Image 1 (tube, rainbow, N blue to C red):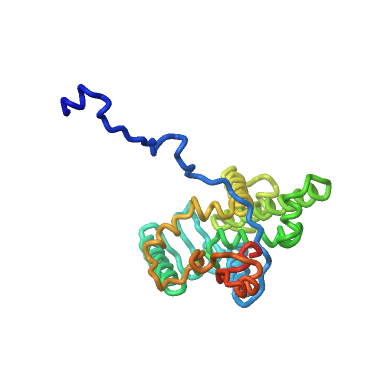
Image 2: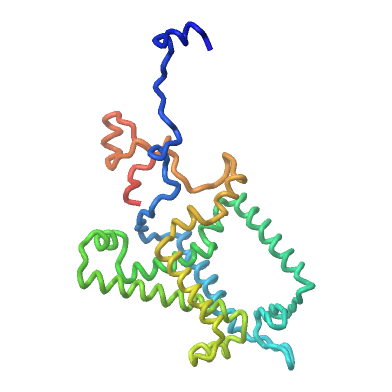
Length: 287
């Protein structure tokens, strides 16, 4: 320490600083969900998305009911995960525990296929085939059918509680819960003979694990597909973190470029006549 400075405190240079890590300066790590009211769209990509949704949901809900004759003393369910006998049946394929490396190989191939598709055509998985996307689309179909399209839903959400609003909300959430129950029920049918298990469920003779599984999947389907939606993709899904390592300047992504979109204006032609800057995206608030 300089002795002259120590003996004369007025010579000490003082700096005005603020603690950057103080609690009052910290940004929250979790942002509350802001409701998004997507508008119904048309076009070939939307039609393709409907087709993908119907195919994927059809496979999930109907696959356990497909029969496949394997001869006597063998289950006749085409797709069956028999945990008690430690066997996995997939049509004409039968996999035992010591052959699980086949399943591991298929999973590795599926992962590489997902990387390849993403690198070639962008976020096709997230936009069309992800289970979160498929079930959110299904929930949106119910929401539009009961509450109307974007403007009607926004008006209903902003309005005061009334009998009509309460009735629509009860019907909507009840339908969502019913979808959750069917989703959970379809899942457990993969682990036992579907017709027999269905009878046991309705007669109260099914194992406790079956009812517990249906209850858990009902809750998760309802919460993730109906209440959280975008939050699942933002905070829970690992795929956006993985995809960030595979993108370059030529990758196809759905994002917002401020250098193209600003300044925003609803009257682009008038603004251009006056010489004002107008972005390519001139009506984002209506999207």
